[in-house]
Length: 200
Image 1 (tube, one colour):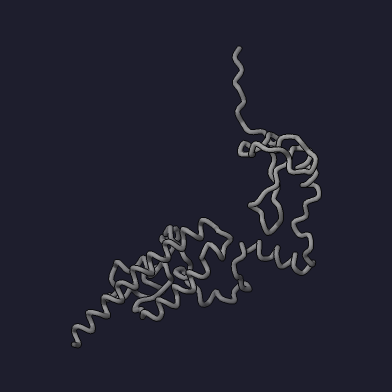
Image 2 (spheres, rainbow, N blue to C red):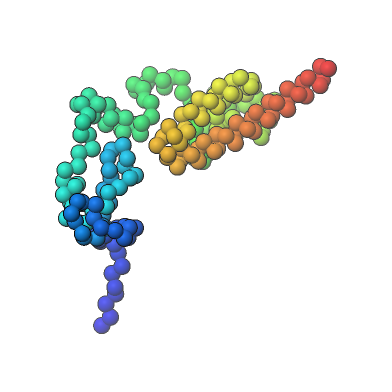
């Protein structure tokens, strides 16, 4: 009877990406197969240990070491909201509509009412090609260049990967924001040139 070989990675197997080196614990000559973060400020930088020493290191690990109770509580609260600003329930609800949320994948499109803002009919003079860029930046039509620049600076600062720990999703979102901004800026600049030619 043939037995099928189990190829699944077991919990205590060494990391398959472990470097070919000795354990980082002083005086240990065992192979280093297990990673452990160097500090809470360098979670992507690792020590490499053998199994007994990674267990010892993990048993002593304290993410909040050196922080006051107030700092710990603030850190936990930030984690609950993914380090994004939050407000008391209902404080901003009266001012928010479906288009106030950035939805680059158009997941909420089915729940939206027609128009650039909930309850507002679509402007007949708004080019159809600008609807998606305006939705992406959460802007209304008509739009001035100053409004566009102000909104872009706010979103670019908020969603820049450097402000979000190098988050890949923030990077992709910022690319979509840049494309929307470029499209709207080019349209406004072209419209302004056309206006100047007509009045010349």
